[in-house]
Amino acid sequence: MMLCGSLPVAWSQEISNPPLPETSPTASAPSADSDQAPDVTVFSHDFSSRFWLSGQMNIISQGHPAFPAAYSGPNSLQPQAQVATSRVFTLYTGAKLTPSTEAIFDIESAGGHGLSGGAGLGGFTDLDVVRTPNLGQTPYLARFLIEKTFNLGGGMVESDRDFLSLAPSLPARRLEVWLGKFSMVDFFDQNSVGSDSHLQFMNWAVDDNAAYDYAANTRGYTWGAVVEYDDRAWGARFAEAMMPKVANGENLDADLARAHSENFEVEFYPALLRGRRSALRFLSYVNHGDMGSYREAIEGFLSGRDAVPDVTLYRRQGRVKYGFGVNAEQELGHELRVFGRWGWDDGRTESFCYTEVDRAVSFGGDLGGAHWHRRLDKLGAAFVVDEISGDHREYLTLGGKGFILGDGKLDYGLERIFESYYTFHLWRGLFASADLQHITNPGYNRARGPVLVPSLRFHADF
Image (cartoon, rainbow, N blue to C red; front, side):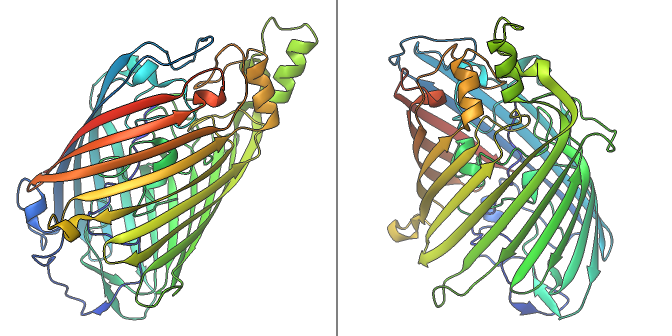
């Protein structure tokens, strides 16, 4: 499954959608000191243009040495030493159709593969991995959005232009509506410290709430609508979107009467530390689709009806999966920030879209390189604990498999991941990163691991 929906967060961004200073309705382009200035893209951009054209290239090469494993199954992280490389290329285009209406059109190509084909870990090591290699590298439509902004008063505030928002200024109190194709985590569960696999962390349990089974196809995208209200000190957003027809499926179900997803998030910017920015977000979601029940699959096996537990045999249209999340970040000092996430889902219905994690806790931080005279360098570290529900655990113990996990049996233990990275600014829009991940109990299995995964990443902004 490709999980590259995270935003390429601007290197200078401190808080996702923070309360912004007032400005005149006509805002200037980013200053020379801003990390969105032309010196951090390979080609210079006209920030006053009504059009947007940019691109990104992200290449991640990972490997691990041989590690101990008492046994392996069909969806195990293989214990033999291996190396894998993923590639994602994205072309971002957009245009302001009117002062309050924008159109976004992005094309993407993804290739390569992940360690063990992207299987064997709840918190996989590379967010850019495509779990269905036969999709190939043919370019595809990543985003197609029409956005409308309604001015609700309160003056204008500055806004950093990016590929999802082309306006240099926005109403302080506003309602925004997006309609089309997008990634749910373009809008939900964003975190400026840990949401960008292209310049920050690589593990998908760090960059996203791993228990957020957000509606998406194999590539990480869906069709739907997002409505967002923003005020100076808080905001809220709601999305209605399509679900895939099968778990980790390429095709989405267009019949919203039987399969759909509701997502709601509210965020606040409390003044916890004087002069330091803070953000606190609360998330909830409900998925409806043709999903299976772990308990029914277990009972089918124990009764002798099935040779092995198979959750796909017990899918029922309209089954519900729901969950909650908390997302926080805090600026502590000059270029020092911390973040944390907590996630929970019901754990009875099969993991369907994102990954096989039912409970997740993560925390970490980053430090900018200005302290050692490397303004655009960054150092980060994070720790994650992933867990699955009792039904999910029993299903895997009896030999069942999901679209990510399946060792054939299970000696259960919490999956624990530590990740650290250093990103070097090479020249203009070129960056390179060194990353190291240490995973204890891969796939929640104490009979396997630990695993050490070093990575190298090359990133270019055009």
